[in-house]
Length: 117
Ligand code: DGP
Image 1 (cartoon, rainbow, N blue to C red):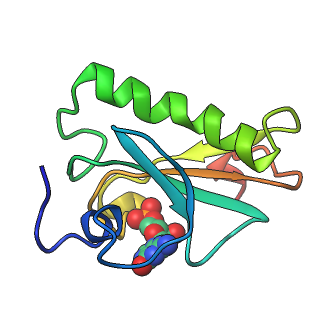
Image 2 (image 1 turned 180 degrees about the vertical axis):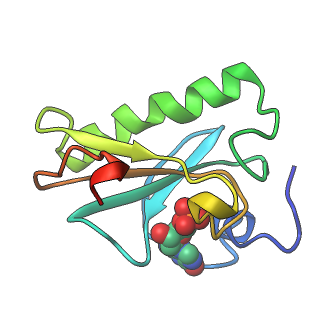
C-alpha cells in the first residue's frame, strides 16, 4: 500500500529520483541525500508504514532488517562494521514518516552511548 503524500513512497514508485543500492519485491534501498558517513544508505519497505512501531508484519520487518546485511555487503562494509539506526517519532528526530533503516559505515565510529554526546 502506498500513501499519496509520502516522500519515500514516491521514491519507491520512481516518481522522485534516487540512487538505488538494492531492490527486491519487499524493500528498496537507496543512498541518503545527505550522507552523514562515507556509507549512508536507507532501506524502506515498499509498503507504507509510518514507523517501526506501526504494526509491521513480522516477516516484512525481518526482511527489512535482513536487508541491512545485504546492503552492507554490497557497499563493502559487512566485515569492517556498520551501524543501523531507526529513528522513531519526534524525540528521535524522525523527519520522514515512512519507516526506514539507516545503514551507516565506512569509517570507525564512537561507541554510540548517547550519555557521552
Ligand atoms: P530520519 O531523520 O531518520 O527521518 O531520516 C530521513 C533521511 O532521509 C535523512 O537522513 C535524509 C533523507 N532524505 C530526505 N529526503 C530525501 C530525498 O528526497 N532523497 C533521499 N535520497 N534521501 C532523503
